[in-house]
Amino acid sequence: MRPSEVIKRTFSVRLVSVTVLCIVLSVVLSSLLFYYSMDRDIGETYGQKIRMLGFYKTELVTQSLFIFSGFALLAFFGISVSGVLQTHRVVGPLVRTRLVAKQHADGKFDVTVRFREGDAVPLIADSLNQFARAYGDRYAVLDNSIRDMYRDAVAMGELIQQGDIEGAFALRARIAERMRELNSVLEGIKL
Picture 1: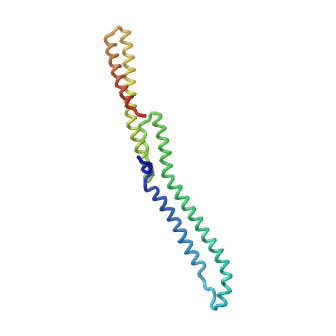
Picture 2: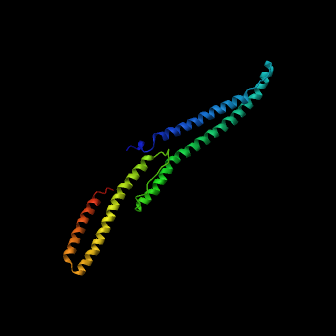
Picture 3: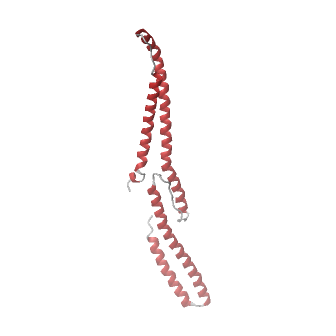
């Protein structure tokens, strides 16, 4: 599996799309607000227009700084919120995966990882759940074999105390066969 296949392709597309949308929306809104706030009649005669240009020059700078910085903050806020929400689609599943992995380490292989719709790393859940099924089955076989071998060993000890040597040898052969089966299961485990 390539690293680019771990995270859904839609994750990066969605993150870039929302970022671009925030920037474009901020530019359009700030331009419209700036246009409508600066659109006024500056006088009827040429002399009035010249006198008003000096006044509007400082107002133009003040208004543009105020409007563009406000919408720049809005874009920054939108991009930040989008980034947090999008990274939550990666971090949330990793936290859940970590908790389930701890339970698997404790031998609770029946616990599975479940992700929400839209989480960015679904392959991790599939891989961990597949691991849990495979090793859970092997663990169950090992556990049952060891319990059966223990019962047979206890029964063999009782048969020896009763003097039934033939019955004890039969149980010994059964324990040896289970031991070979157990060994083949253990050899198949890859770490």
